[in-house]
Length: 128
Image 1: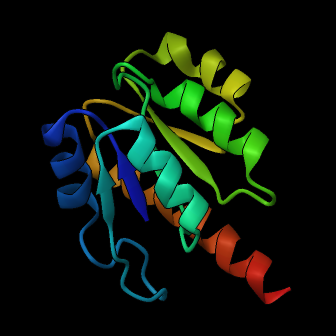
Image 2 (image 1 turned 90 degrees about the horizontal axis):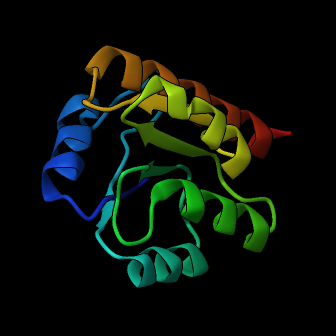
């Protein structure tokens, strides 16, 4: 699972909220933290990511714009969850083609549920 934010605190909050086993019944997850657009693109190009968690408030490249770019450029792109600071920004997440959104600041229970839904879909897609 990749966590993208220019803010170390946001990345830390996500990791603390989810832990090593955010979804009962699925294997433990490992995290890749990236803080810059070039690092995000390089990690995406390398593959092996089951879920992208992107900070919609990241600068200079926001998570919503990066979500759209990843969906445009990666064949069968893994699910993308965008962290949004304002509920009014949910429509932008639709534009970005994000698969899910979660509120920022992080609500651990809500984030775990949304991550769980996306990881279970990813596992089911692989099995079929």
